[in-house]
Length: 461
Image: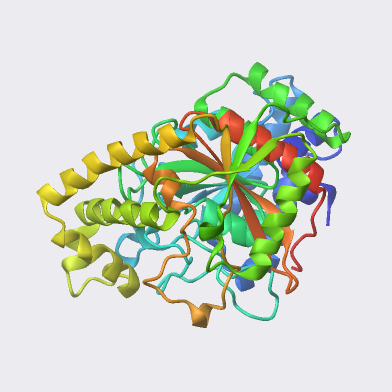
């Protein structure tokens, strides 16, 4: 693998400044890797080779002339294909919109492009981001890169973005998350995913799933890259972004961060039931590693079970998804994913009275949960309680998101970080949950864990 392919965002920015590689060389190498791997993995919906190469050459020329915009200058990235870019098609994972060209660029994409980023392509998604397995009946289901023999799902709905980052086809990609759609595929593909607080990043120009739950966030190879991307997407100035580069240098030199004084809540016994043993083993080993950071780790008893919170999230999401996409799903002749149709259509049975009651109950449940959380800085759960399954074993109406959905429902933020591999060579993710607006806390704890965990294997692709 070339040096540029092995880099994440911050390392690639440093490599540019050290003149170890160029943006044009990096884009060229990534395009060659996409050409070699994507026919099998199916991560990309669209790739823009000519424009990306031209942008890479332009980025190099600007840098040589002393006009570097900032540390994201010349960094290739991909977008989940629900995010608009003017003049590009946004399919939303649907045959019904496969030829829709966006009239304007979404704000989050505009910020990345304005910072000098190079859009290399759009990635595959479940239709309208409705589902957690990563399956798309019409436009193709991305293949998890950790199993070279069996087509295992990558998780959804931001499946293509996670596969692209995991397989080193791009250093960073954006996804959206309504009930786990950034974290699920990140966990199953062995990469980092940040679910941001609702409202912290603009959602204009992004096809909605459920407006009161939808968020957008980065999928990366490291926690440092996720922190960098979050600040970049919020509109941070280049001078403030460079501090991530220096911080990453300290992490690379093995400087462990103490979490002394932080109190972290872990699963009670009842929440461990029904989980895959191999995932629980990874979780317990991760907690053991985290104790070396001096964090105070205690059992946290939620006022409602995580599965009860997940069901409450689904009720609201279904009603809102029907508002956005119900008319299309009601059309029996529309060429839509039948599994997605069956997930959205129940929303028509939710009355205005029931929906308002659910929203009011949500506010009450959020307050009750936050009251119970008092004294804790963060919560730690497995991101998913199982490893990725073969495509032919997927149960479409089930949803493998018992620990991720509650985060959206509770208006919190969360980070998933790889824990390692199970004995059968499949990745598991560790989820760091923090209060809404406290991404810095989740990122700090996640970074400390990542340091004590050490390096991980790469997928066998």
